[in-house]
Image (cartoon, rainbow, N blue to C red; front, side, top):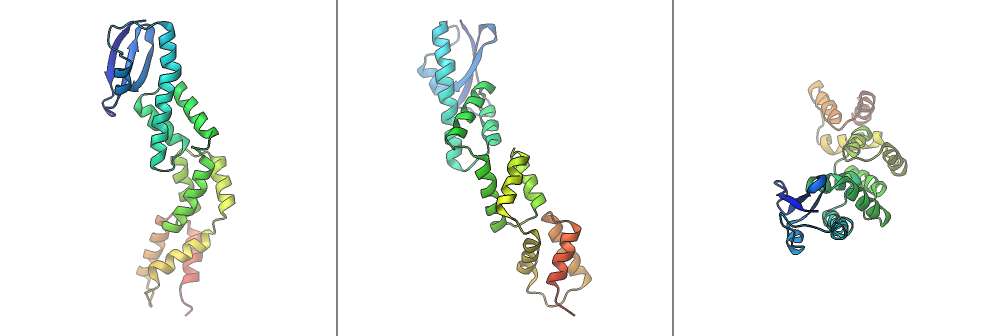
Length: 206
């Protein structure tokens, strides 16, 4: 089968896609393409093509995923997006993610629990907002629910602690300041009843 063209990835310049006859294509780093001596017009035997698809492409995609994960903890959704951006085909991506899940390089359960711990420590917010953020990272609802069960987030205490940290220096609380407190807690995702209870607990007795 003859190589009809080789097109470079405009967004990730280290990558390129090799197109062959009969709508066959695969993605590899440009350096690997050069080492394999793949050029336009070259004919590949079925054996060579199968080796490239089954071994070279998979190894390259897995290496890319591992390097991406080395920077920080990622979700399977984030790894999938990265490999798609690099140009790898869906079958290869699924194989890589499946393998990395098996060896715990990717663990969405661990990611969700660690995310809740770190966010609650560094920038506390409501369970609703934390849940939305995890969903945006592609975490499944079941995993999110399990993470909250493990973490046992006390939203009332979180809201109250936020008020203590931000407003403890105040000694007088007029309507304008109380409205600021409400807006502040709303920005952290708390609902009306949670906000009311937190403010009521925080304000000094008259």
